[in-house]
Image (cartoon, rainbow, N blue to C red; front, side, top):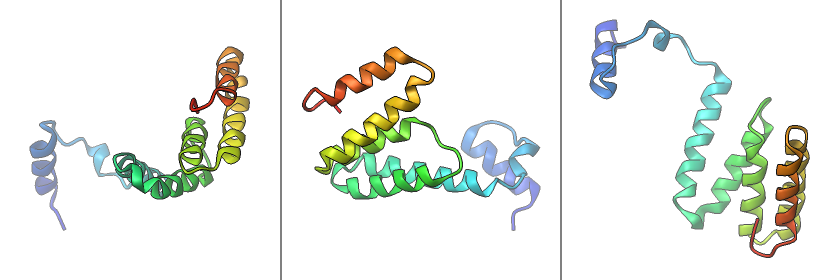
Length: 120
């Protein structure tokens, strides 16, 4: 167990900033899961040969109650990279549908990628 002073020394040493009492509140479990999955995705992104791990982390992230729409785009890219062109196209269309709700032109640009080879 760390004392408050120990925690403060660690924070100051790592960030140069003072310990904020809010930092000591327990994290929401979903936030912890999101952060772990983001770390896994970042790890896998640096290792193209581990697209299986990246896809696994994206798919788990998509199961969470809320997630950024951009994950669908990332999933589409991973599916195409792994040779599942039909699955990638379906996922890109699903992403375009989400984007269309806020920006029709952007959705059309995304859909345009469906018809250009190598442009997912």
